[in-house]
Image 1 (cartoon, rainbow, N blue to C red):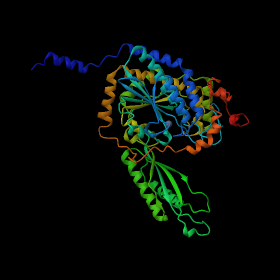
Image 2 (image 1 turned 180 degrees about the vertical axis):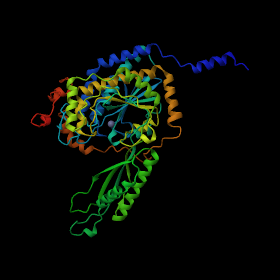
Image 3 (image 1 turned 120 degrees about the horizontal axis):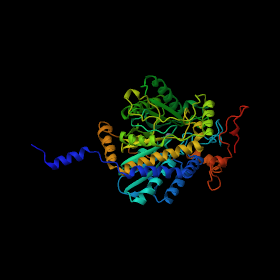
Length: 535
Ligand SMILES: [Zn+2]
């Protein structure tokens, strides 16, 4: 039987890809120019947040600054979301698609470092610092959002922009709670940004791990440690035996696992048998079942340590969690076309000099800053997944199509979570990298605003490929709450000194200028680190 003309028409419509709206290319050129013209605004955000240098859950100055800035720019703000005082969500616009932009804002303990100085020169000895570079991603997102919003307003384009901070990412402490709280309920796609040393994105499973972060606390009995030690039961003994047990067992764990711990409570003083002690573990594996297996093993060893010492294992606290990330193929491919158009920033001679001096300081190849774009990394094969770090954007990525845009604000070859990673983060390297990132972000937002079929394709990949066999189950339990008290004491100790060094953009064009740092500063010929005296 011949198909009717109507059926034929339908078939033709279904197989013909929707044409690309003619104004899209012009819009992209316009936002790229607009983002470039906002480079000083971008620089100020990068420098301002660098100077606040706040640890996870204590990002009060950073959040107040960003909330005020977004409100001034017409966004509607909800603060304290998911029971987290420094978390917020900003929204602007109406209707579909809802494009959600996220980036982390917290920093690293003991990573205080003068920017632009290629050797270890803390601004404040022992203080936290942006030794991960989380001071730059909000600048990428906000600059991009404002450039796109300008076009949407002028030309009445439907769509909603949502912006939120990754609070306490170093504690993988909040994004699972954002998911639980419904932050992404109506969101069509999430564009996350993260500092790197190249302009890049990827799709499929990440090479790193997911994790559960657990505090194991023991209760013993105090006694005079010399006068009547037999009457005491040491909670610290339980902590030590748990760690010893774990370290022996480590040999017989899968190579993909990573696990590490610190002892936040090891007792008060030696002459008192510690009645309380606690050890805090990050337990990392490639997927949910393996993470849960690792956690069950740690729980067994903790119980065994309590039995050996006649102490009690108190209820375990989950302080954070992260699913291993899986990024969306359609969004990554779309974003990568924009990455190719934008390209890497033009680095100046001083930029390259700083990078090479730092690389020599650290004893790694002095290749300088990236001058060749990374390729679009396709999905890794299971055998290529060897384990590594975690990011709770993973939880988001299993609930809504997501990618991470990596932008070139840092120097290749650094150790990570270290003062060295802070050096470029308030210099022209970070500023140019953030501007390049903002261009890609803005152009990618336009792709999804103007081409609804891309949103549908992203969801098709999400539903029919990514989550076909794997379903998200939170690692946090229903009774868990965000660990908002973490880092409170450390920030209280350092904040008075740090406050004196906050960036004042009304007086200084850049933070380097405010600190009086010559860019770049290299180790002096006599071997001294010239930048090391306190300002
Ligand atoms: Zn990070």
